[in-house]
Image 1 (cartoon, rainbow, N blue to C red):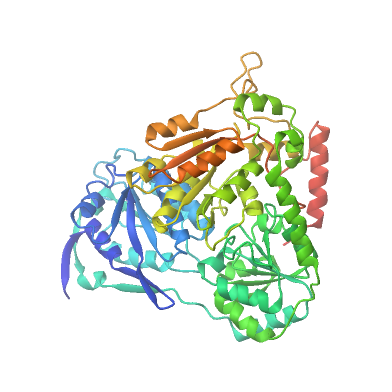
Image 2: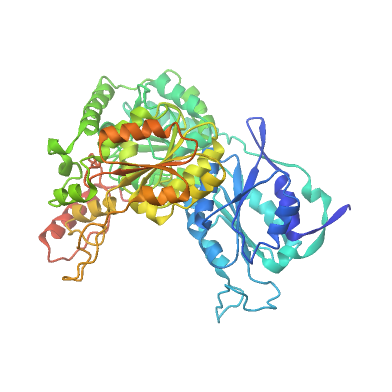
Length: 639
């Protein structure tokens, strides 16, 4: 057997350079590069290997471990899970910072390879710097926190263990049905230890992502179910995009005249302008999609996980039967559905052939629903403070609106701002979001002119994903403009990868919606009968001792300018339009600090979301909210 003597870290780098993915006959290197923040747990091990012989890997310097892992995740998501960027950190806090990203990747079924350093396998310097000592089990380190949030977890305690660990890592990372975060813990002493590795371990490996075919029996059952129904509704989930099945999805919908709605992960899989596209569905959906969903007799979910936001906590679909087409048996089994376990494209193709000339019985319901939403959309685009409608959008009044107008110096409504942005950005520009009120407004209001231009992380709704994610998307789509849609709450959580975007000369646009608070959660709080508490950004009141003092105002543009970004602050529609147009002329990352009034986002459009309203309260408003919750719960599916 031919061998080559390498350190564990050198062998790891050599191995991942040789991994390829094949999909529909096209081959591509699977690992494009690696994000790094070096510390004592990886700099002299994996750092040496990357310095001496990185191969084809592009090495990127992160600013925050969670941020760089979020960027890597966004890259893989935008690449439809066919290519990844790995991440390495030191032991201790550096590794712990990536746990949130691991959870986010796993919740979204996005491949993410994490390579955190670990404590010494020999335990010679026990405890090493940043080591957690658990007195009941000395084998535990920070990296054990990755176990519950990883699809595969391993610790390489000897150099030869690297081979089985990495082969299993690749198995999971390229598994379309069950991918997510993969964590390979690397004790820092083992990284530097050498072993005689078989040269065959480093030969080119091709991991084929195959289109799983549906069983004949499941297709027959699905066809009979569809043919027994008059008004089915398709749901376009993220699996349609990852399968690259948009053309087949459109063909199926058009051939059988079936309208479709979009999930957050599926949105922009097909253009918003398609005549059968009803737009976003569920808690963050619009009136047209939710109306048709409530009246449908069959829901056909294609590549969707059926989260509580898609199903409105299982209340939205009334008494409709459910049919799922999903490559994952786990997700296909939800809602007691009739299941077709298959690749989205192959599943749709097989069922389409089976139902032949079947047509739905829709008359003008689709057009009427779309017309109603278009009228509402125009109203939302045009809202100004003078209309007196702003407090009504969120479903409850806010008697502090004038205080916010004075503090922020703005009359801008968030919905109007989104209309201006949608009109002025390039049609093929990609928008990125994750948390707060913006995902709801965007799923409802954003018109995707081109496919795969809407990038929303809403499987975990991870605050702080937006800017790092935009950088990752830019790495995946370097010729397209990428816009981070981020609230002030999320921005303050994590924004440091904007520095990395400047370092790498990868321009991204940051559109920061500043309403001085966690506006989405303030709406949830007040909408369930509670007073505003701990969700607005206010100074502590010296008289009351509570967080109900004056509104905090932050000059986000000045901070970002210090990082090297080109920045703007806007308070009016005219200033926003000018900033958007001028930002296109810049060569560096830009940030537009948009001051928007709170309570100016969209409403729920007859979709319920189940949250834990207190069963006992002295407040009548909370009692009413609890009764409403119980009433809605009674109408929801039980499983």
